[in-house]
Length: 113
Length: 112
Figure 1 (cartoon, rainbow over the protein chains, first blue to last red):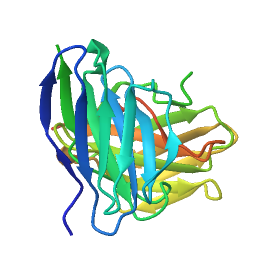
Figure 2: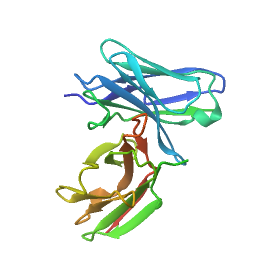
Figure 3: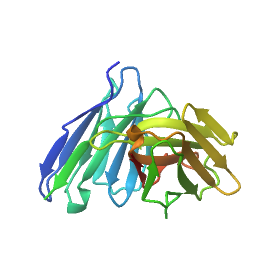
């Protein structure tokens, strides 16, 4: 099976712009979670989607949003980018429940200038 | 407030010896714990997990110990190998909102 894929791998944006990141889970996996990784904060949970519904959400401002499509692919959007949004954004998929093993993609590294 | 804490940012261990990575948590509702390993430029990969009904889980060179009364878990790697050099994340779930909470990670260096 192909692993979790994320596009793009690298992205440079300027403050105030918006960005959309994409994640394709492992075939058959219905749960997709998004995380932000920064050097000082480790991995922080953004949100989780299951069967096109947001099942849980982390403590991030409303500028961070996401969605999931019927084929389980997910997108994450960040509007009005701030310098502090520079991070590695990781997507993880699992078959049903987040307590099952999550499989992570390679991440999208976002740099906000 | 950090619900999952990995107090050692880095750890160096001689090849062949035992590596012990520690993790503390504050939320007594957590009932499932996981360890992930991350190499640079790659996403984390699952290593081993433990449910709160157990106090030990073993998988090859990796053993996770859970001390619920102390709200502490540890990952033992024995013997340590050069390929074990990576960042290790501890994670927990089962809180009121069932999110998975990660620690900040510990960078393990295996010395030749």
